[in-house]
Amino acid sequence: MAPAASRLRAEAGLGALPRRALAQYLLFLRLYPVLTKAATSGILSALGNFLAQMIEKKRKKENSRSLDVGGPLRYAVYGFFFTGPLSHFFYLFMEHWIPPEVPLAGLRRLLLDRLVFAPAFLMLFFLIMNFLEGKDASAFTTKMRGGFWPALRMNWRVWTPVQFININYIPLKFRVLFANLAALFWYAYLASLGK
Image 1: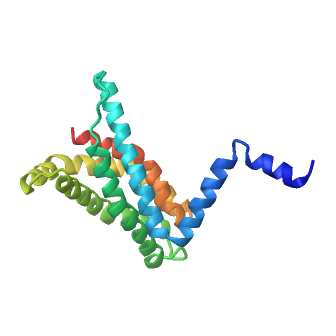
Image 2 (image 1 turned 60 degrees about the vertical axis):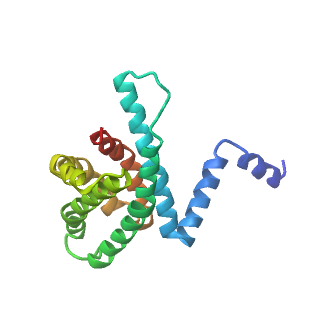
Image 3 (image 1 turned 135 degrees about the vertical axis):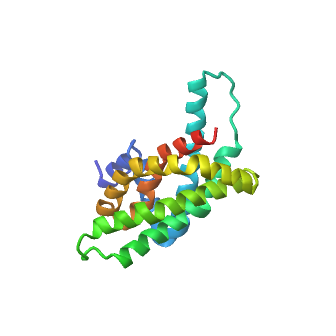
């Protein structure tokens, strides 16, 4: 069989679509890193909220087909405008401020992420979601008083091993994507706090 025909048949196979999608993602990541990470964050954040709603419906044994469309939209906005860009620049900042050759760089980066970035990012999450839900400052204060510390403690439990792997073993250009994939479950948890 001719090599071109063999290659064409291989590209038409089941593995061709994932390979092409990965190639496109890598191209966009190289050409438009912030926009690509923002779009990926928005999509995966919305998906995380959608999954949280599905889990909640199943847990309550609801048979209705209606979902809160506003939830995934709010998470998409947050992911696109905040999670993707802020994470992109935070990882770059960490890489520059604490280079790999610095003694205990991985531990220092992890501490910076867990003790500075995580609390600030969680507070920003509560603030932006409060705004996107059309709630006032008193609702934000109530949410912070009742939900911030439990969410931060859970964040430290869940995200510390994830971020240890992310910061120490995942290449810089894939860190936002890796965190976004882990965040599918984290956003499901945060969405459950809002109920």
